[in-house]
Length: 344
Image (tube, rainbow, N blue to C red; front, side, top):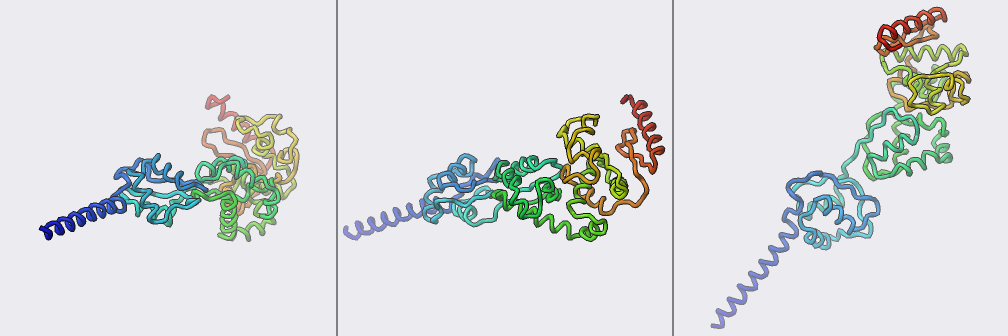
């Protein structure tokens, strides 16, 4: 009888232990991330607490059982006063250990920041803030910090020339200063390639000056085939001391970016950016310049053209002339083409 009781007690204890072991197994090793996720990425802001991380995981549908996650987190010593920030890709059917290990030490998922043709620093700030944690004000503050810009070798006027349009990968929790450090490295890398520094020096221009002229060329034409010729026109004007008279600089000066037509208001507006009123290059770029426009200036056509005029035939191309007489003839053709297309 006693043996039966002892056997029963031992068996019961074994079953209880087995039950608790199974419960622990369920907590630690059972899948706790759903097998279907609407969004695989979670973004944990800088300075988040453990409770805030759990709220994010729960709110975004990454946890089946938050209690089991808490228990595993305690066992794995995951809870910290400030949790690791970043953007992480979560896989379906992960268990709690998988999830915690990834959030604690796994590789961050990057975001792609696309810089193209932004006009002003505040446009860059707004664009970048769409992709990473730092808000636009954080970028604007560093963009407007004159002391910081001087340390980098720029002024508020030349600052935009630091940006080389491209698609860049960043960690989501990159801050404004880290972003700028990356832009400086990309800028240096760009100018060291393809003999760009040497080509600029051969034209007696600094990279900032090349960039500034390229920003004008890019606003005058979006046809890569004629950018080198367009750049040649402006280089000829600079060499001869002729005012650039570039309409896009007047638009920039007035900030009248929605205008469809440049009028006397624009060309008579007093600003160092108005190349009708002031000879030479403006103080800085009038927009972020494309790589094709930069290379067009560095590899500009050698010719005697001084003038250019839109063809007016809907192609977006221009006619070029060496003399005012030839330019006037092109202008007459432009007007005829517009009338033939019902534009005037």
